[in-house]
Amino acid sequence: MNVTEKIISSHLVSGQLKAGEEIAISIDQTLTQDATGTMAYLEFEAMGIPTVRTKLSVSYVDHNTLQTGFENADDHRFLRTIAAKHGIYFSKPGNGICHQVHLERFAKPGETLLGSDSHTPNASAVGMLAIGAGGLSVALAMAGEPFWLVMPEVVCINLQGRCGAGISAKDIILEVLNRLTVKGGVGRIIEYGGEGIAHLTLPERATITNMGAELGATSSVFPSDEQTRAFFKAQKREADWTELLPDENAEYDSEIEIDLNSLEPLLAAPSSPDNVQAVREVAGMPIGQVCIGSCVNSSYGDLMTAAKILKGKKIHNDVSLSISPGSRQALQMITENGALADLVAAGARILECSCGPCIGMGQSPATDTVSLRTFNRNFPSRSGTKNDKVYLCSPQTAAASALTGVVTDPRDIVKEPIVIPLPDQYMIDDSMILPPSDKPEKVTIERGPNIKPFPVKEALKASIRTLVVLKVGDNITTDDIMPAGAKILPLRSNIPAISEHVFSKVDSSFHERAKASGSCVVLGGINYGQGSSREHAALAPMYLGVQAVLAKSFARIHKDNLINFGIIPLEISTDVYDAIEEGSELEFPSIAKEVKEAEEITFHDTTSGKTFSAAHGLTDRQREIILAGGLLNYVKHK
Ligand code: MIC
Ligand code: SF4
Image (cartoon, rainbow, N blue to C red; front, side, top):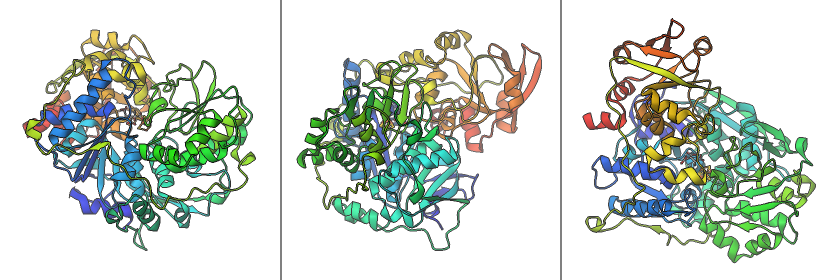
């Protein structure tokens, strides 16, 4: 068996390890962050279970940390009190980004982790199976229910050789994105192997597994080996370490080889993580901003790399450089060893340990300027600036370019490989991780006025009549469907309010037209719903009356979220897509009967007079969820 099969088989509750079959696995650990967590805990609360039934559940605050009104602070207080009451650890704002802190303090080889954030596979770097999901799926896992998924194919990426000067883990994952694209990982788990992995430290491996989310992969996994052990030892967690290697004769569904010796510094050009180019192709282009941070490149090693390049120098006059450390541990360590002073002396603006600019919480770039970021996503306007030009790159490329004011190949500045060895001992201080209360009955959950109950759908009607309110193209992201940023994120606990922003950056009249229709559908292209796990991209459209999404194909997490909230994901052919216009009226005469008994759904376009069919591709369990009007109703009936 390979590593993936070993973990899945030891957690298998239902089904068989055959790619394409529905399976259920037990979940050992869960994580949430504040932007998805408030909803997930409201959903958990609705299940009426006093204490979580996982081995470990952690609630982080890292996204909504700008407190420009009462909303975010109220959410933090709600999250702290509900965690204390229900057996959940609470990582306070300022302690760091969920994925970075989870890797440092909680990830465990051989275990499973379900997180309400798409970059949860960051933790799979230790040889665990970490998967991103919607908040409701995570709430169910906290209630002790297994997680259902389609058994993915397992692809082996064989790394050979060693990265040269100026090249790092970020360039490896950008090369993978270059080859596979943002839909190349759908229905797959990527397992890394080959002699090249021996040189990659755990935080470097996490850079690679983190951005497996950008491939659309279910997860990305490394084996647990001596590098893993060294990391656990340095985190004073050696007791949590176990070896987990693939068998010598392990088989994979396919294999890809990458020669690390021949890699060069890469970047992802606007506005997709798979729009990969060599840095030297755009070298010399003026830049206005450099941001170092986000869950993919904000570790102690990443910050030290930037500090080494910047030490004793000054950043270019035209550049604003911001640094957001991934965790308080990393920040404390660079504070003690003087690297923070080097960064400040070079001209860096130091932000708190949070997602920050990655989710448009501040640092939106100036109009028509290039922003170079060590982040994982550069979807259009995600930075908060319309028509932004965000390039994703490694900390080395970012730091080198901050000095020159133009995109710079780090090899022009970094002649020898920068090696930041793992510290013998990381600085351990878990005082900002609050354990759950030992007197839960005494804890009162505190809710502010921004926390509104979540809407629940009714059971599926026998027939429906709908309006096509929007027709969109390929690779629509959940940022397109439900934008984030400093203005909209504080509304994550208030579905009526946030629903006014659905598709607002694509079509500002969407919200009003959807609501007025009373019942509507959205028409999409390939890989509909890629990116963030935010269930608000399903919940808010459901609140506005969206009954179904008709698309050529769907991204995994969003498809699950649609089903969880009773919206039917229907797969259509290109011919059907081309034949239906925005504004058409579609009638589904026997939708409930067909969801129950048939493989295809028939519908009439009363505007054109044509009749079409679409595959629903639902498993038996998913059919029941849709019929019940969503997962919460389904669970209640059970
Ligand atoms: C993201 O990177 O897009 C987010 C913000 O972390 C999301 C979660 C969210 O929208 O709350 C994710 O990746 O799932
Ligand atoms: Fe936060 Fe950005 Fe990572 Fe999402 S991708 S968890 S917003 S740092």
